[in-house]
Image 1: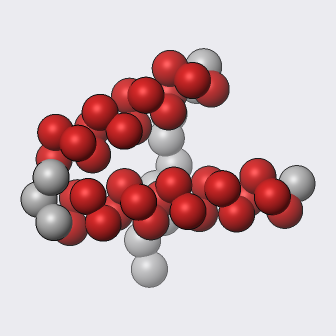
Image 2: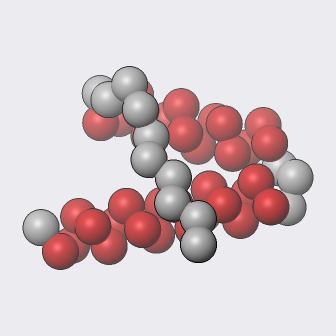
Length: 48
């Protein structure tokens, strides 16, 4: 379970860095690919 949490955290930081650097298309493409891969209809993003 810890490994999965770590992967989610790393993914969130990757998405946040794309968004912060204004790479919006890449950010949305990354999220869309993640949703398609895991079959979920949501993508949690946590920003401190």
